[in-house]
Image (cartoon, rainbow, N blue to C red; front, side):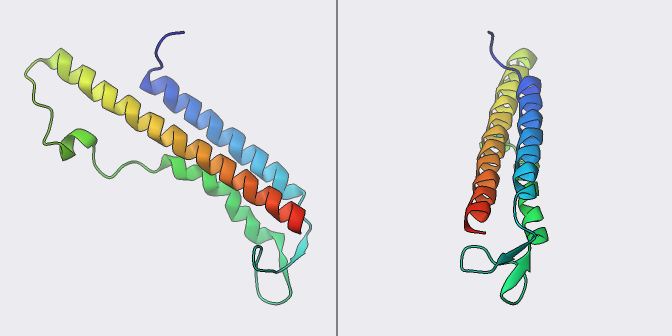
Length: 124
């Protein structure tokens, strides 16, 4: 298997995001309609809360879509080369690194969202 391109990593990130949302939503379906509020799980006012508040956790993997504010090479003062091929290669490497960072963020958010849902199911 060759080296992954930025497009392949982006596609993998979208697939992981979709899988994470589907799994988290499936776990959300197992939460009781009303749960008792405590220190770890608290939705709404009063002694009991609705599970609808936990539906926001399903969107947690979408945080992987947030781009970096500015590109890395702009922080370093630009790319200092006159060769267009070398400049394109450097930009491609930075793009691959950015997509890898977003993939790691997406996977971490998937795991966190599933963990939160499992925690609510066990404690609810």
